[in-house]
Amino acid sequence: MAFFVPSHNGTVRGVTSTVMGMTTSASVPTGPQGAIADRGTVTDRLVEANERYAAAFTDPGMDARPVLHVAIVACMDARLDLHAALGLELGDCHTIRNAGGVVTDDVIRSLTISQRKLGTRSIVLIHHTGCGLESLTEDFRTELELEVGQRPAWAVESFRDVDQDVRQSMQRVRTSPFLLHTDDVRGFVFDVKTGLLREIDPA
Image 1 (cartoon, rainbow, N blue to C red):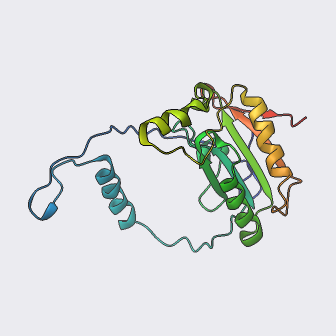
Image 2 (cartoon, rainbow, N blue to C red; image 1 turned 90 degrees about the vertical axis):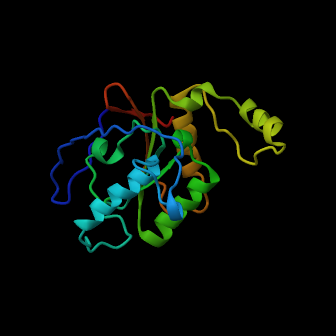
């Protein structure tokens, strides 16, 4: 099922997407006074891009409250361009992303602040096909413990069935005592090959 978000004037916005390639690079030597050598790291390039962005930037006059009163929880996967995929504009939503897009305690923290202090009411949960968490297990924590001498306090939150994990995330949201609004919670799986969302029945 495709999921579309209306624009501010009530019409459905068209979706466009621009893919920008970026290569990675290791740290490079610095010159006098720590100056970065030509090209630099990926972070240096991002800072340079920000300088160009800021040169033409004007204050949009928004506050922190999302215009559409919606919070989106999604995977951090680099293939998901949420604003383009959902027809969203700057200021429309809160976006909370982590590995897998799973609802952890910290996601509940962000959603609670989003609802109680910043006025959101709807929650959209988005997992996706081909997620890296499908190839991990909780053994990853044991491997880390053997490597660094300390076991992580957090769970990997790996899964084998993406649909069932979306259902679990919806259930975690709907049963949280901290959230004010749990009547409009919907979950989806984004297909990274087609760009379409498929809605998951919570039952």
